[in-house]
Amino acid sequence: MSQIPHLNGFSIKNNEWHAENVPLSAIAEQYGTPAYVYSKKALTDAFNAYEKACIKPNGQRRAQVHYAMKANSNLAILNVFAKLGAGFDIVSAGELARVLAAGGSAKKVVFSGVGKSKSEMIAALKAGVKCFNLESIPELSRLNEVAASLGMKAPISLRVNPDVDPKTHPYISTGLKGNKFGIAYDEVIKTYQAAAQMSHCEIVGIDCHIGSQITEISPYLDALDRVLDLIKALADQGIQIHHLDIGGGLGISYTSETPPAITEFANTLLDHIEAKGFGHLEVLFEPGRSLVGNAGLLLTTIEYLKPGETKNFCIVDAAMNDLMRPAMYDAYHAIVPVKLSNQSKANSVSYDIVGPICESGDWLGKDRELAVQPGDYLAILSAGAYGFTMSSNYNTRGRAAEVMVDGDQVHIIRERETIESLFANEKLLPN
Ligand code: LLP
Image (cartoon, rainbow, N blue to C red; front, side, top):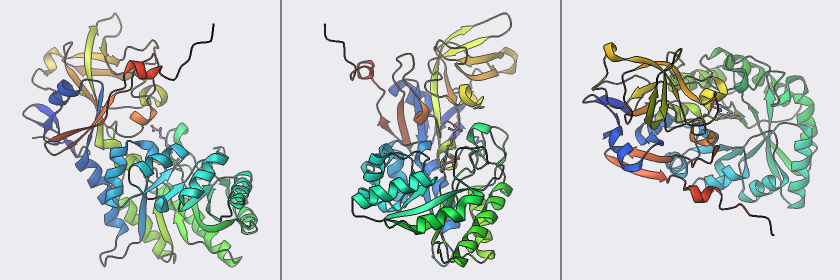
């Protein structure tokens, strides 16, 4: 058996890729392709790696994970995390409904996002979420009005934009001055003072999220120091902060990245908070990618091999509508043949792996050396985060099936979409 270190849950046995104990080829044959395959063990181990840092050896909890479910919001995945004790970070009323449907508790939900609508605020207040992470004065005023109309008090945090560079892709950095996110550092105290005057808001915390796929700890420590300074300054003004939400963003290894291990990352931040004298704060993490990214892959079948003058194309049945990340961010996902028996350097060819969609941007991998035939299965690795959740029906393609493997068992956790369902809500004009 061989194992790629960052791919817990997926490994090669008898010359073939497996999800836990199940050969991927058996999954492809039974459920068809494209299909997302998740490992329950990998999900559980990643969550427990956070828990190891969150719970002190004496059993005392010093932090709580709120899974950022935008990374992967399948009900079965939410349910696995809810059972392990996770809270959730949501960004829409739709995500709130999913948490509740999956057996999560609203009391452990924080509601993030820059554009919450009135109806979303009402739904979250009625459900009794733990906290609204607010990003502007108009949003604060709206929440105050909505809470007043319901005769309720809304628990709030303000999201600080600490103006630090997370050193990641520009589309996924969020804590720089030029980003739309958070309240400008210099405005934070003033905004808390305004919040303290709002009769239907109750200040409970402070929040910060600097970006995603961050592979170094130093930007976190910089952001943390800036936020701890604010907590101190607020206390001097009589505004008490009870919880500190340090966001998500820890990166994963897609190829050669070397992010800190989850437990080490979380311990470093928590130890830093304690060392600076803020050990009394309740701390929240909002990880998404680091919990699910390497716990899932996308299984696809090769339709055609198309040799070309300058490029060879390997045309597969998955496409950019199934996995947007390469087209959108130029993201790298390792792509491996599910059966390795035919692989030899001698007969391997360099291919661009592309889908059937009518766009040149519809690619999943470039310049990959493979010895493959039509009908072979490929696995696109590290696709558990922002894979299915960002998928679409472009070209009227039904979204992929999703399965979760637990030891020897394969559970279908989302049926492949039928073509009829894709236009079931559409209407013809009357004559
Ligand atoms: N908290 C907030 C407020 C966020 O905006 C995000 C992600 C997270 C937590 C979770 O971040 P994570 O631990 O997953 O890095 N679609 C992009 C990533 C977008 C991230 C958006 N916000 C991608 O595929 O790389």
